[in-house]
Length: 115
Image (cartoon, rainbow, N blue to C red):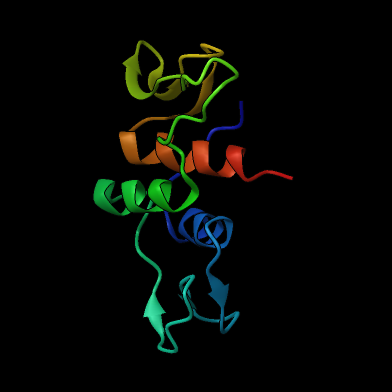
């Protein structure tokens, strides 16, 4: 798995993945979903756990999807020997990995939204 580093480039990628529109290639600012027509600095998703959880909420990362039995798998943030993981109970496969919880959430968002 490719290692991800915290910083503006990752924050920008997460913002795009959750639906923000960039207004200027020279500025890390954007319009969040819902259409606020203001320059809003993109949150530091990769360094701020609250911002990372807000982004995860936007894409439903921690919202279990129901299966054919009407039950959803659990989804958790887990610390293992190799770092932090976002894991799904249905597949037991990590969706994202990072050196911090915020990085793991960012990696999982990018993996979830990958075409």
